[in-house]
Length: 250
Ligand code: AMP
Image (cartoon, rainbow, N blue to C red; front, side, top):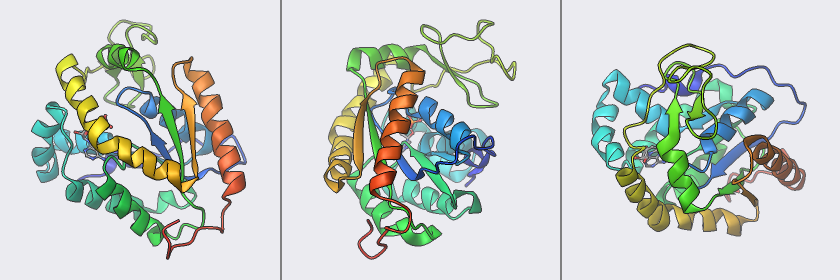
């Protein structure tokens, strides 16, 4: 198994506020990856995207990648045990010390229960806080089918709303942009089904925890980022560092 994709060094923080452990929640295409990248650059804490780590494993031909590939292409979820194990390894890396942004995990109640039980493992003293991004389904489909990704720096473009300067190539790396094999209409339908049946209860789980905010993701990217940062500052003010209770997983 490889976890390299998630260990790229974030840019230096430009803000004294440290959000600590953060969950970005929301349906496929809602903008979790884009927003996680912005938060990573702003606060200097790593983005942990389970989708990115799985794709990295597929690219490298690992056993995990072989087990995940066809499920991912069809828009189905990868088994909980494999994903939990992968996240456990990632959370053991030293760069998560000041916090991290989990993007795409947990996606099932089994994963959420696992995460709650393992939160204290990396010495966290700040409770997890969660932000759910909402966008309607028609817009999600447009975002998914228009999404293009730089294989080198993982920057996310959209041919409709955020095209690169030179068609098909990353503005920064010059690499040829890729269209994810599961960013098709068919796979999107399947992913939404999985989301409604498996991930919606996870969102309720964190809503009920109280350490949760919901924001509108249908506005321009920088406005979404502002709303997330405001929500994180409010939540962290309420649930500061030092208030994490490992016994209760809270
Ligand atoms: P994403 O990049 O987050 O859209 O994830 C792409 C695909 O990777 C998903 O459709 C799943 O097949 C798989 N995947 C990513 N994260 C998880 C997870 N937490 N649990 C199960 N499967 C996942």
